[in-house]
Length: 303
Image (cartoon, rainbow, N blue to C red; front, side, top):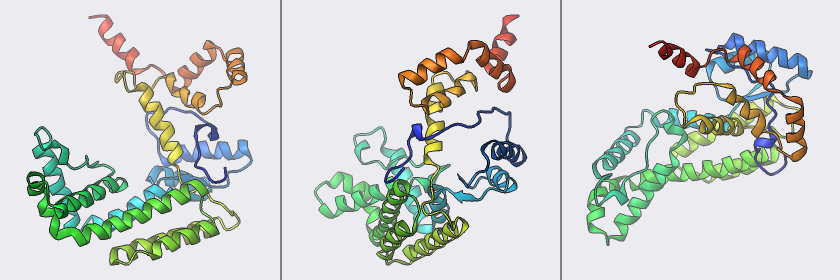
């Protein structure tokens, strides 16, 4: 769609298959079946996980690296060995741990996600900027005393904040309009405004990414460059099952085929008239087998 990001009803699940584990060969097998069924797959958008990457490559499908994950990799290369960044992150975590259950809890830093830290830097840079502004305003003595260690790093924080602000602008353009000749120009114009050395590194990495992606799909005027909607679909499914930690994977996984439908009266009527409980049980037996809950019941039933 033009000038908006994808939503759930834009998705069409082609296969819902459950395995105890996935590898590149199994992914290739499914993709080759789909290529034959569909008559071809123009390109795939995904993160750069090794199994996905291998599966897509072996199936002969061009892979577009998801924008969000690609930016996270750029930031990881830029910041993972940066001693100032590590110091700021560690010190911010200590502030949180020290004051989270005190009268000064209102000044604590946002939670840092260890596993996906470089996907989620913006809340932290915003907090650093806010604390610098608090110090400069100077009227909250008790709070300032706890965060004044940030003051010597003002220039560093401003440079990093400038980079993150530019990245958010670029993501908004590309996630709503896709990658094209015109959106690439818009993004490069934004990146030109970054003057720091770190900003130049990010700019060069993204220029290379845009060029490689557009060269890969030279005949495609607008390229979908984000897999956010797939991440969201799995997030919604996980939310459905989160209240029952013992459930494991059950036939509720089929809900992804439901919430990506338009759920109109006509669609629901057709589903109720054409899909039986027997169909679901057959699918479950083939792809799910004995569930975690069923194995638990069997284990304790004879006790």
